[in-house]
Image (tube, rainbow, N blue to C red):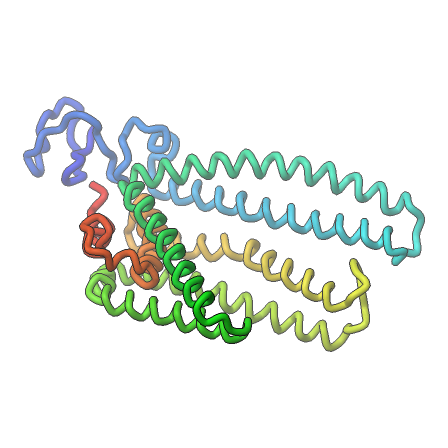
Length: 322
């Protein structure tokens, strides 16, 4: 069977013209997902459900591998520091053997993580190419980099001219950043309004940001409770405040890494239930966050250059995959 790459309808293997829209069927024939029917991804995962499932499982593997590697690292640090600081009531073998096992296990996880990381990089590049947003992605990253560079140049000029205290320079830097963002948002207000066509994906991005914010608040509360109840205890250092900072920061990262793939799972499942193909869901979930960041903070979008203007970026963003 063959699918028309213009209307997506199924045609016979011998049809040269689509019997629905009349356009010729030749060249690279696309499946309804937007991927070529002979591509590796389409052959291995022919249905949309299989594509979603495979990608979600891969996300779990990547995030949870990092999570367990972090847990092993923390355990190793605790064992080594307890042995070095004399904070144990057991002989050296009770430290050496578990520590050796952790090192071996960490080495295996680290190797697997490097392999998965390399594969993940190629997978994302492949999906961005097939979603036809690889050029737009590069443009948006260049905008973010150039905007950050301009911000630091402006801040450095203010720092040289004003030469105030660290607190004063912090206030000036924050005010400068808010001013640049306000000017960018005002200038790009029409383009931001055009993104409302993908309001559901803006909602997905908002849910992710809310999760990050609430995770941070939760960890800060837990660290605050610990600091009040066991202020005098130490595990890895002589200073309990450093212990709280270390474990509080690692706890925040661990909480985010462990639960974030679950959130992605729920988001992709909702997108599939709403009828979006996997490639469409991946494209807009990835690009919406980057597009919002660029239109709200990318001062370079104000430059009078066609390829840099926000109108061009939004047009590329709204182009269909087909």
